[in-house]
Image (cartoon, rainbow, N blue to C red):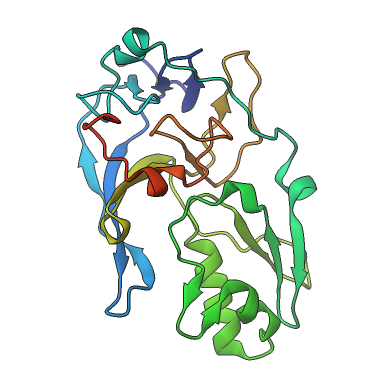
Length: 235
């Protein structure tokens, strides 16, 4: 008789990889852009074969990426976690609009640029959200933010207007800026620090996989400046 699957969990190993358990599916996807270079979504996710439990590289040096190959030991990777552990609502700056409310935690930006369209950026769209079309665009651009930096609220109920995500992990690629992107964690998978503390469980967050974020375990978009690519190390 098959054993029941454990609940999805991502554990951060001290100065080491991410230990993913609970049968979390792993995918690859690419940030899509239109003819003008605006980010408009993601390619259809492609499944990456895994076992029920697997480890993802967090130091950015593994040649067997995305999986850990032990390189962090040789390079003496410093994986110290420096993220602000306060709940998202406590950190967020609020931007009220006539048709919606936007919450924004700037340090969480993963640099995927979905917040900017030809019609304006998410903040401008929120300001004009009495227009139904612009309100819809404001919601869509916020929901496409993989890091959950941007969250739109229903002003009448205060409820977050969140996209539906099954528990899963997506490895993002960003050819527009010639870089591999972060680890996109979807569907409310708990992330447990190396000291046992569990971060606020959220529908969407992005975790660093280049090894250089200043808010580990979360991504701060430094991979773009570095031009970091999975499997090629940092040299």
